[in-house]
Amino acid sequence: MIKPIANYILIEPIEVEKQNKGGFILSETAGKEPPKSGNVIAVGDECKYIKTGDKVLFTLYGPNAIEFEDKKYLIAKEEDILAIIK
Image (cartoon, rainbow, N blue to C red):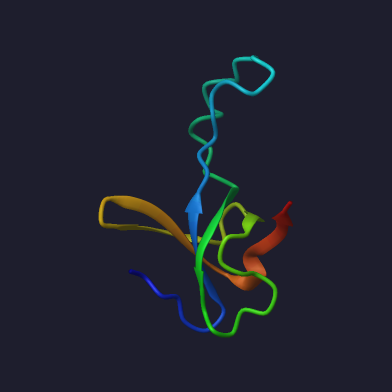
């Protein structure tokens, strides 16, 4: 279990799909682009606006990628979060 400290957030990234919901095939670079959204797994004690379970949109290069128990996660500061997706 990873517990972020201060205003850090643990995010499980949502990978970009090569085929969108409309059935269009996306370009080869679509799958190589870093994820820009994800599900919040845990938050630090100083986070004011983001909570566990939120789906968020974040800055492209703000979060740090980590791997824990064979799963990929991102750790971001709360200010790297651009929006909560409803």
